[in-house]
Length: 482
Image 1 (cartoon, rainbow, N blue to C red):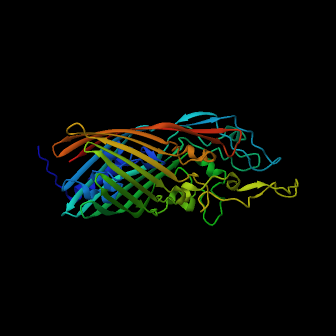
Image 2: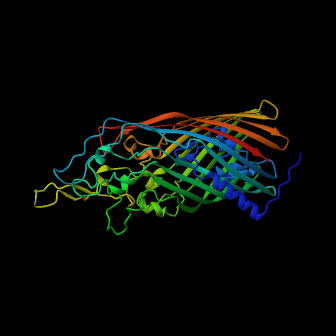
Image 3: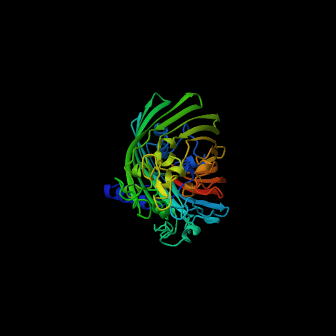
């Protein structure tokens, strides 16, 4: 059977738009919130193989790798079904808020006890890649794919205190009750999509360099975070930049940016290959509708990251590989800034208060509003991830893969409260994959499981409570190479 493909400008744009619409609202098997692999074959190695990639999707990880594809041109489409299971558990009764003594703001923010699971547990994840050889030494490629995602959808008023709400509205001090307008569901949804155009140049028979300009597009939406707005954490009305209305429930906000990825792949001696790639931080436009939530008035850049690895052919039927990958989350303030309770309250008790003579509360000299350059974020650390993989070709027209990935999760125990929105606590990924060749074409399958993991920390606004985050994931990928 022969296949004939006809590409038109309008048809190509329509196809990309369809992929974009399907990707919206998705989440992926993740290294933090980065995808742990691109393309079905790579996911069969749990993301390993930067020095051993044989797919048009190679360029999404290592732009140099497409130099070594066998065919003059290749088109690959993958479709994944992703199943993340996320939940948080609050233990310990909330503490009664303390007033000073007749007026003033609450000093405690206890949450409702119990376990809440996130909804939205099934996602469809499509991606597309194309490569074309320009003579013997030059290859170009195109990739359209997602990076990962932070998605939660709790059918609950997560950041809500029944005790505070019990004081009525207005509060005894005459101020509005910050719990009065809290809504459900609670959660966030951030998606990142990338379009890359790749050029790779082969040097000799066994070495290649590649570069991929990267066009990035991301969307974000937050729901149910009214408490962070109405407790004044985003700043008080009258500030030079009033962020109070840009914390939550503003629908979907979009952001764009432009960057690049560079890569090298080469065979140093018979059967031993080395690969490496680097993507600097991509500066993104701001999420203007959430400038009162994210640091730097809505900033959410894409962190710099690099990967390096080796592969070795034990014989003509078996290849093993090992990668090291680092994601530098600390370079993005909205991701890395910690939550410091003492800096989040706009007012504090007046130590010199005299009843009837002065105010019981004064402005907090240490106040750092949400949305400011040093405003609270998720408190994530950088991730260093080790990936191992193996491929077996003992059966004619078949390839079998397995992979394992480990990376210490980026969430510190002290940051559990904000990270109920993004419980990316997985550390171990196990993958299996296979490819069946059908003449010049092939079909691939990969299954990835992120083992269940938990992080437990204290509620920073109520030390009597513990917050536990838990997550596990399944992903099933089907890929077609034409």
